[in-house]
Structures are given as C-alpha cells and as structure tokens.
Amino acid sequence: MTETASPTDEQTASTAAADETYDVPADATAYTCSYCGRPFAREPWLALHCGLAHPNELDDGEVEAFRAAHEEEAESLSTFRLQALGALVLIYFGLLMVYALV
Image 1 (spheres, rainbow, N blue to C red):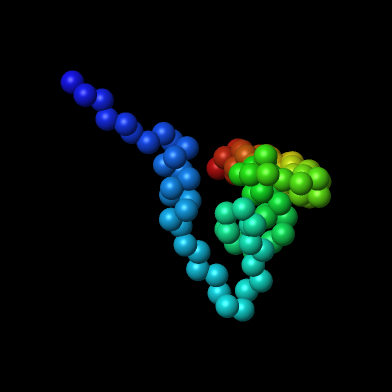
Image 2 (spheres, rainbow, N blue to C red; image 1 turned 90 degrees about the horizontal axis):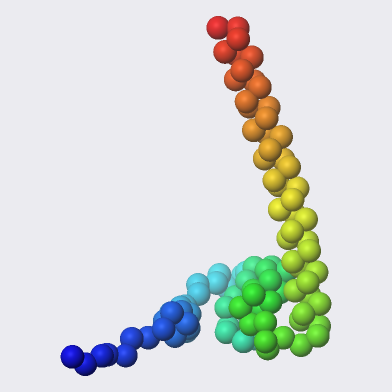
C-alpha cells in the first residue's frame, strides 16, 4: 500500500488565498495589503488583517497600528455586547409584562 502526499491545511489555505480575486469598484478607496494584495475598505481593517495574517513580517509602525486597531475593535465589541445585553433585558421584561397582562 502506497501513501500519497496530501497538502496540509496551511498549504491549502495559502493556495486558496493566492487564487482569490477581488472586485473593487473603480471609485472606491481601497487599502491594499503589501504582503498578499488583499484590498480593504478601511485602514484599521488593513492593520488588523496584517497583524493577524502576517504577524512575523510587520515593522514597528505596523505593529503599533495593529495594536491601536485591536484596542479600538475590542472597545467597540464591548460596547456592542453591553447594548445587546440591554436590548435583550428590555425585550425579556417587555414580554414578561405582556404575558402578565394577558
């Protein structure tokens, strides 16, 4: 019985990433990753991508931009979670009051 070499997950992911094409409108501002060529609509999204996808290739300025974008994203997520929790509590008690009246 002979074994055939199968590509690893990393090789498959890198091949899939290399084959991707992006359709960016001509009038849109795109921030392009200098490592893989992937376009982003916002600069903080590019910084997050570079920090997560290419952490070993970053210079000091890019690392600092990643950290700032990461902190901003974490703060936004915390705010969203609190708002979602508040909305769920309001819905729960609203439905509880409707149930009590019916």
